[in-house]
Length: 236
Ligand code: CMP
Image (spheres, rainbow, N blue to C red):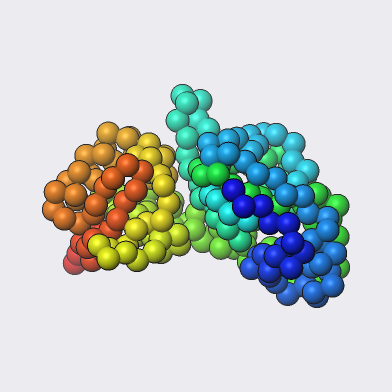
């Protein structure tokens, strides 16, 4: 994995992160010196729910799954964060243990920032404080949508909406259709929507046979987005 080492690259990355975008360039460069670069292999735990937290993470490249482990070994996946996203800020803000676990879905490179430096930025720059509030509000909106989906939609509806959401956030267009852009197992998809792996597999196969999606190992391409949308659009 390519490691980012040049100061100019660090500054370019920090400008992509909402928290740092509007702080003066001088402060960003100063922060750049305080960041530590840490690579993780795919499928590695970064921290566990309940751990004490003293660090915030900024993703340079890769993908990180945020999840709550259930007692029976299942997982509830709350979010997947990618390059430019930050996570691990909550324990620094409220001094409580980690609210969820984090593990890598791909080889991932992160920058870490310690609590004192994080608090310094928020204390000195109102723009950074507003940016953190925006991050939290965005997450609350996404969580509200998931709760609504859990109450109102069946498995096909939840799966269709999730695939389209992932494709919007992470995907790219190909000649065949839109690749959702995230290598995700059927178990992980199931954990994102509160369904069983078997139910997800059955639904994907049904859509595949109708030509709505293409499914290969850990890769989904959406061929007919309108047909997926129909699964969660309530008809009159
Ligand atoms: P922290 O509680 O320190 O550790 C777990 C992290 O997961 C948390 O900070 C947030 O960065 C992130 N997180 C927790 N809940 C959500 C959520 N609902 N959506 C996205 N990210 C979350």
